[in-house]
Image (cartoon, rainbow, N blue to C red; front, side, top):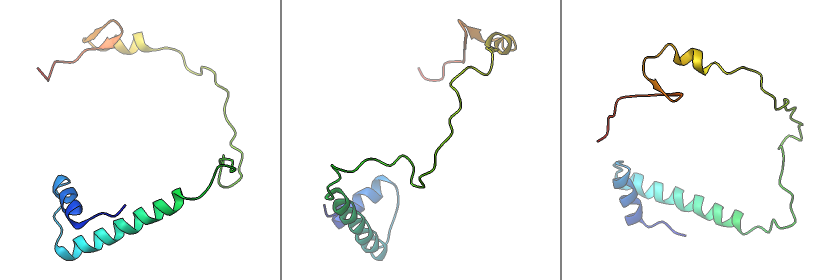
Length: 95
Protein backbone atom coordinates (compact mmCIF):
# COMPACT_ATOMS: atom_id res chain seq x y z
CA UNK A 1 0.00 0.00 0.00
CA UNK A 2 1.42 3.34 -1.02
CA UNK A 3 0.19 6.55 0.54
CA UNK A 4 -0.12 9.26 -2.08
CA UNK A 5 0.56 12.90 -1.32
CA UNK A 6 -3.12 13.79 -1.86
CA UNK A 7 -4.16 11.21 0.75
CA UNK A 8 -1.65 12.65 3.18
CA UNK A 9 -2.97 16.16 2.58
CA UNK A 10 -6.51 14.91 3.21
CA UNK A 11 -5.41 13.20 6.44
CA UNK A 12 -3.70 16.41 7.52
CA UNK A 13 -6.85 18.38 6.82
CA UNK A 14 -8.98 15.92 8.83
CA UNK A 15 -6.49 16.01 11.71
CA UNK A 16 -6.24 19.80 11.41
CA UNK A 17 -2.49 19.57 10.90
CA UNK A 18 -0.87 21.93 8.46
CA UNK A 19 2.39 20.78 6.87
CA UNK A 20 4.55 22.57 4.36
CA UNK A 21 5.48 20.72 1.16
CA UNK A 22 8.85 19.57 2.54
CA UNK A 23 7.22 18.14 5.68
CA UNK A 24 4.50 16.51 3.57
CA UNK A 25 7.08 14.76 1.40
CA UNK A 26 9.03 13.60 4.45
CA UNK A 27 5.84 12.37 6.17
CA UNK A 28 4.73 10.52 3.03
CA UNK A 29 8.13 8.84 2.78
CA UNK A 30 8.07 7.87 6.47
CA UNK A 31 4.51 6.52 6.28
CA UNK A 32 5.30 4.53 3.15
CA UNK A 33 8.37 3.03 4.85
CA UNK A 34 6.21 2.04 7.83
CA UNK A 35 3.59 0.49 5.54
CA UNK A 36 6.31 -1.48 3.71
CA UNK A 37 7.66 -2.78 7.02
CA UNK A 38 4.15 -3.85 8.08
CA UNK A 39 3.65 -5.65 4.76
CA UNK A 40 7.00 -7.37 5.18
CA UNK A 41 6.10 -8.49 8.73
CA UNK A 42 2.70 -9.76 7.58
CA UNK A 43 4.31 -11.87 4.86
CA UNK A 44 6.26 -13.96 7.41
CA UNK A 45 4.81 -17.45 7.94
CA UNK A 46 4.03 -17.77 11.66
CA UNK A 47 1.70 -20.77 11.44
CA UNK A 48 4.14 -23.03 13.34
CA UNK A 49 5.13 -20.43 15.92
CA UNK A 50 3.75 -20.40 19.44
CA UNK A 51 2.84 -17.01 20.86
CA UNK A 52 5.15 -15.61 23.51
CA UNK A 53 3.85 -15.34 27.04
CA UNK A 54 6.64 -13.00 28.09
CA UNK A 55 9.55 -11.64 26.02
CA UNK A 56 11.92 -12.05 28.97
CA UNK A 57 10.99 -15.67 29.81
CA UNK A 58 9.85 -14.39 33.17
CA UNK A 59 7.11 -16.01 35.19
CA UNK A 60 4.46 -13.67 36.47
CA UNK A 61 3.13 -14.52 39.89
CA UNK A 62 -0.60 -13.95 39.95
CA UNK A 63 -2.60 -13.28 43.07
CA UNK A 64 -5.54 -15.43 43.99
CA UNK A 65 -8.84 -14.28 42.52
CA UNK A 66 -10.66 -13.61 45.73
CA UNK A 67 -12.57 -10.65 47.19
CA UNK A 68 -10.28 -8.50 49.32
CA UNK A 69 -12.65 -5.63 50.15
CA UNK A 70 -16.21 -5.45 51.33
CA UNK A 71 -19.02 -3.55 49.62
CA UNK A 72 -19.19 0.07 50.87
CA UNK A 73 -21.59 1.38 48.23
CA UNK A 74 -24.41 2.18 50.66
CA UNK A 75 -22.04 4.05 52.96
CA UNK A 76 -20.58 6.09 50.10
CA UNK A 77 -23.95 6.85 48.56
CA UNK A 78 -25.31 7.98 51.92
CA UNK A 79 -23.01 10.99 51.51
CA UNK A 80 -24.74 12.03 48.28
CA UNK A 81 -28.19 13.49 47.90
CA UNK A 82 -28.41 12.38 44.26
CA UNK A 83 -28.71 8.59 44.09
CA UNK A 84 -31.37 6.23 42.84
CA UNK A 85 -31.41 2.43 42.69
CA UNK A 86 -27.76 2.21 43.73
CA UNK A 87 -26.57 4.69 41.06
CA UNK A 88 -25.51 8.32 41.21
CA UNK A 89 -27.78 10.67 39.30
CA UNK A 90 -26.57 13.73 37.42
CA UNK A 91 -28.42 16.53 35.65
CA UNK A 92 -29.20 15.97 31.98
CA UNK A 93 -26.77 17.89 29.79
CA UNK A 94 -27.81 16.61 26.35
CA UNK A 95 -31.35 17.00 25.14
